[in-house]
Image (cartoon, rainbow, N blue to C red; front, side, top):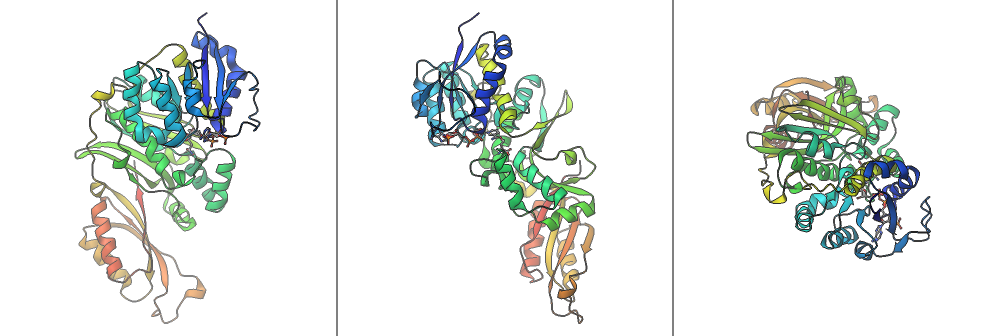
Length: 439
Ligand code: NDP
Ligand code: HSE
């Protein structure tokens, strides 16, 4: 058998400790698949004294991830620290510069520096592997880069953040608060070190930029993504979605359009009977629509230590077997510049919840502004106000929620109409706007 592959694992938190535990548990079977033994030779974290649930007594400890990367006793560096700069970036750059393959789950780092890191890996002739960076345990990176290499992709979209899907699922099913659900997602190891990245949509955007590059053969450009998170989704929106036959999901969508590649991340109303609406909890789902294969959906655990470590180990096995592929499916120099489709041209249906002053003429004023924007309304829903708020004369103007569902229109038309409704003094608060995805 060949020489063992000596791993240096930087970061022994949720994912790193799981990688070490799976290697200890399944080492023999993994070695058989890799063609050689894989040993945990070095490790690094902030707190050496913390119990990681795995025997580290024969592992070389480093306090500094760069020192770990440069250690001549390490053949392959597994970066599981996280963050787009700082220790994670320094560790990966040091490893690649030393001609060592790198395995990472760090989508923030890749979204920001993926192209430069891919170039560095190519120069040194080593692998930069990142299956775990997108959709956790779901093998979507390999699917796009290898299994679908013969296709021209039209669209890739899905639920890419386990934390958000877990929060939305539990808020809807159990009526729990946003804060309670987020705290549970953190306790279960799903959330990022800074959960703002999850709930404000940035983590989904990082993953989407990686998938866009793989799907369309373009350079990563996370700045070109329109991003909205779920932190402003109210229980009322989830209840209205249910009443209207929808469910709210945070989707990442990348699509080839006439004006370029549209990339967007936002809460979305999806038909309650659709396949994507059935994806609940920490599960992720990615649908790829391509010319040869047609439509393909991958569904599985999107976050959590063991599921993510499963993807990390798949990359380690590739490295051990000597596979070196261009990180984003083709040499970095051949990736095209991403032509950005402006969000203002996005077309689709909209859910709009307004807090309307309940007085004569309000509804007519809103309908007029929508009609002026050539926006057709599929339905208007106004529930009776709480009895405590009801003014028997109907003249006080107490704000009441009014929900509009539009037929397909453009983002520009919706923004313009809402700005006019606001300027007319018809609403008490900024509107809630949720895009509808009907197919
Ligand atoms: P954790 O926060 O659980 O673990 C981070 C680890 O990095 C800890 O062991 C920490 O040390 C160590 N660390 C932090 N800063 C330093 C530093 N300056 N020097 C050395 N070590 C450091 O993160 P996760 O395991 O959840 O995530 C790791 C990576 O995997 C991230 O890029 C994340 O985005 C990605 N990922 C995570 C998934 C998940 O479900 N959790 C899923 C997919 C990807 P110590 O333990 O001593 O504090
Ligand atoms: N915080 C991420 C999520 C981890 O919840 O999806 C997986 O990338």
